[in-house]
Image (cartoon, rainbow, N blue to C red):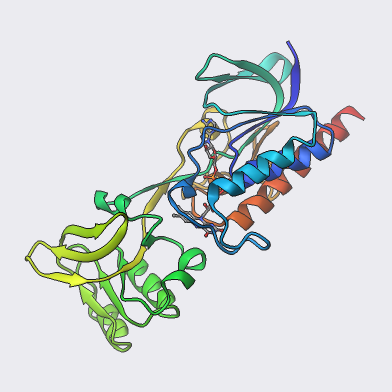
Length: 301
Ligand SMILES: Cc1cc2nc3c(=O)[nH]c(=O)nc-3n(C[C@H](O)[C@H](O)[C@H](O)COP(=O)(O)OP(=O)(O)OC[C@H]3O[C@@H](n4cnc5c(N)ncnc54)[C@H](O)[C@@H]3O)c2cc1C
């Protein structure tokens, strides 16, 4: 069976960038991606120079198209379900949902993260009128009547202060959590309103928020805002392969994608188990790919 130099799992900006760098370094690689990238729910991506406002799908298509210039790169649109470590010869067998098996010397994990919302109906608005990253979508919501939805005081205060830069018409919604006296004073200083009653429902049309209904029956009119979700890695590949992980979920690396396990590299949001951006993730992918190529070169020279 053909042994690949590297398999890249995940074709978001980190995996696409890693694949491009490895293709250009003449490495035999396979990129696997199953289309569950975190920003698939949004219409436009912002802040990536030369691509400000691009549709996420178009971003991915351009990335995949560029890989076609490099004959040593293959791409499959499928899910990796299992990675088996072959300890004897330091290789890995990677299995897909559709029954493919590939053998590789090195692996880059670039599988991203996913969100969890304590209020399920946030999903209906996420990516259209509710967002989690002001640097990504603050400009589009500027000067609008917004909510900041967070259930931890530190998150509520941090996000409200940040969003105040984009809109001063803010209501902080804590879904049943009382903020401290000091927290309330800080927000009231800037005329930011606080609603701490539990939320009953989010009301809107086709992803565009119009009202928040509270359990008390009261409603307020708001056209969008920012939420603070929790995040998780969608698989435990890093742990299963023996990579050391910090208590906060960050996979320990050397800063350029090498994990504590030989031949396993990691890039993008899945490394930190927290949100970043297209630009940062693409840069991470480039760094991890350079580490893979450097290691292959030195090991074989
Ligand atoms: C609503 C929303 C709006 C955003 N807007 C912006 C913006 O405007 N600007 C910006 O810079 N950032 C934005 N982001 C953040 C941006 O999407 C992320 O920072 C970036 O996508 C992270 O890149 P990544 O490569 O680490 O992960 P992802 O882009 O999530 O890619 C991970 C990939 O791994 C694949 N994958 C996962 N598991 C498997 C598996 N087992 N087998 C095969 N494939 C697998 C998935 O299909 C996915 O394509 C936004 C995010 C959201 C949610």
